[in-house]
Image (cartoon, helix red, strand yellow):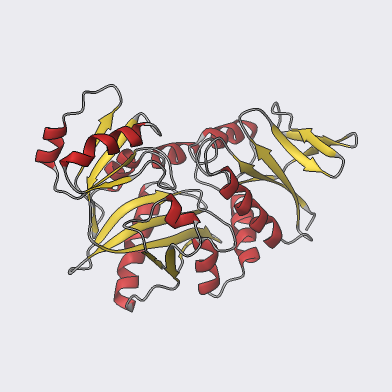
Length: 327
């Protein structure tokens, strides 16, 4: 097989820039150099560029090509590992669709929908065995009637931006006094905010991917946070949360969870690898959907790499199967 030119896109426009860079580094370290020639392309609001020993070279966005030493390089595949906009919300996907360059993630429509928590929940609603917390969606243009929210939902509440990942701008509120400040904090991140009831139980995350034409569900991870909830700090600060992979679940629970998340994947028309976060309700073990992440972190200690290893798979082979399946 001839070496394929892979553009590994990292960075983005959000606070997850550095997380994305770490993801890209781990992917590059695990891709087979005999099969893939990897070019890490950094994306920020000002420019898209490639960094080499002789300096930086800008990408030609007209055809997504790179000119090095007078030679024009075109790419066989784009491996998008940009968390948040523009890599997780459909913008890059739409661009590559127009250029006819295959990529590793869900398509533009699914990527855009899944960045919106309320829209995602509307689509997956009704899947057998899947439950959701009661919630209210607020728009930045509306007047926010605190007493109406309090009458509709039971405390404690989670308040979070409707779009975006990584729990930035998220708060847990125990009574009406804390609600206005939490709403204001979330609106700093997005023009839509989701207020939802807190579901008490154990929190899990599970990856799945279409490999060689079949949907493969990876072993689940249980997340035990020393904080009150799994926020940005808990996700990205060593020692704040404990992650147990594979999670201590019965064969029956694993089978039921696999059925639910596979249906979520199909109903949202997902492609490539995704990660579903959920809670098993205390006392009943009922499955409560939190969200789906279509560009999950890929640093060495991220959840998907943990789960791939727990499944007895080689991470490089996993990435290769994603690339070959999309090409």
